[in-house]
Each structure stands twice: as structure tokens, then as C-alpha cells.
Length: 148
Picture 1 (tube, rainbow, N blue to C red):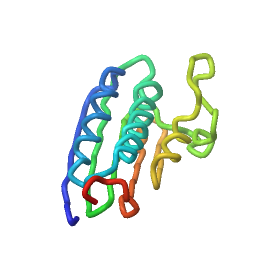
Picture 2: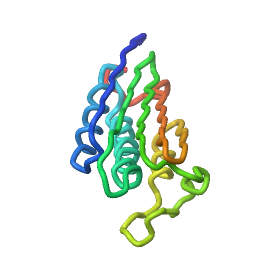
Picture 3: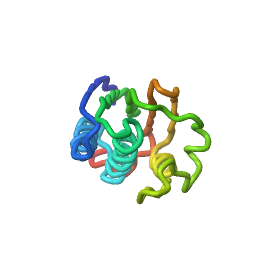
């Protein structure tokens, strides 16, 4: 299917917006006819990325989170961006069980979860300027899609 479309969302880094973001992104991807498993993967990865913005990007304040979703042929591109404190060491942050908040109930598995559910995860960050997480899901092998 040759389908090109784009969605842009901007919302505040409030925990109640995480569910809204994941539902919007998942719903927007439906024209590509992904399987239930693929939709669940996307929702999980988006949840993790948005939760990172809510928990880590803006300590003790609320800021903006932006999501850009692009549908191109059989690929879903999702950019989740904040303008918060940034990540000083992205490689360290991507290590399983690493958390910058060891005193809270954070598992340190957010990036690991994203990487397990998506075909590509790229993290770009600059201290005091923010972080962008780019998630890509390819649907070429989407054999479970209804009518696909």
C-alpha cells in the first residue's frame, strides 16, 4: 500500500497524557493495516518514550512533548521529542537497568523495551536542550494483518 500521511501532536508532560499519546499514535497507524501485535508493540514503545519525557525531561516542572508520526508505504516513523534537561550519556542511559532516579520505582528498562518492540530506536539528546527518540516499525513482514 502506498500511503503517505503525517500527524503532529504537542501536549504537556503530564502523566495522564501518556495514554492519550499512545492511543492517538496507534489509531493513526491503522490505515496501514498492522496486526494487533504490531499495534501493541507501537503502543508499548510510545508509552515508554512518553513516560521518559514525563519522568525525566522536566524535573519538578511541566514542559512540552511533541510527537511526529509519518506513514510511508509499509513503514511507521515516530519521533517523540522534549525540550528538557537532556541526557548527558545516551549509551549509559540505554543500558538495561540503568536509571537516573535510583531512589524512585524506575526499572531502567525503557530504552530496552523500546528496542525490543521496534525495528529501530535512535536517541538524540543534548544537555539542557532536550531529547528526541525516533522509533521505526517496518510492516513488510506483517503477515498477521487482516486482509494483508
